[in-house]
Length: 395
Picture 1 (tube, rainbow, N blue to C red):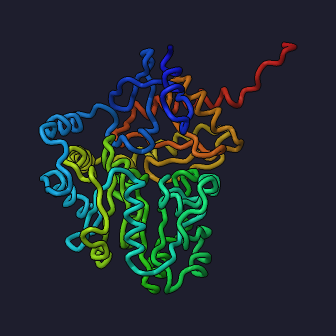
Picture 2 (picture 1 turned 120 degrees about the vertical axis):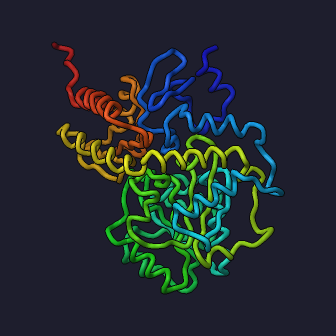
Picture 3 (picture 1 turned 45 degrees about the vertical axis):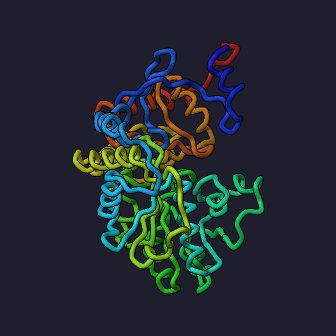
């Protein structure tokens, strides 16, 4: 029986059978069970910030192996050190607080409970947004195709257009929170309109509403800032984090700013595994490496280089380039993203299609000249094959 047969017979059919089985990784590359090498320009969907088998991650895993889990009855040095680092790099400072969870979805669940603690009934989020698959996170996700099979979900959640006008019309004194992604990754790496976050901050402050930013995909340096909201200069009330802050280990976090830090009190939220010594030690090592190696600046630099190289391809399939830093959406002129992704995989390149007309790139933050050159050469080949007419039977 092949590994694909094993998967089909043993795994719940929530993802379908994967195309390949990966067995190891090194830097920006991974290798399958047949020994084939792939350039990884997805990084586990913006998770593997340092690529694969990075010495800093290996060292943290090894050194923390003597104390993996202690529950939240006890504190640990890695947990406290990571909390201090997150409060510093987010700008939350001494008045901020951190709640550790196990995933982005769980960080969103904590944010929803934070919003409910205001005593207000309504929560606003955006159409076409994505915040997770759990009951609460799905409730604020603005994708009907994901929500409809599980309705009714949480009440008093409204999905509005991603415009300042729609927000102005919807917000009021009964709104507990506005939850937004600075860049909507699962919608095709789409930015909010210019000035949206600044207007959202002004309107939410005016109405006493929490501004909660989902930085799960955009955080940890991916957009060329530590966090995407920092480019706008605003200060939110809370942000949710996961993915890239862990570099591959399962971790999520809710970081609160100012007065929002006092809303959740003892006994009102919890988790068994959240903030355990192992994941905190690895996360702290990942963020320390991003900081010491200048990988936030590298994300901005390399992202600009990739965009410039893509523009230079002059392919009729490329209609638009979106995103910031190393979170890039390639808008396609035709709905052939799935075919492009499959062809790229056959050529040894891992990319992703969040929708039928978008290719998403989220390579490790460590990418350099060689990886970019390899990506452009391979992707150019894939695009050329996609636009070359197949020979007719007559020929």
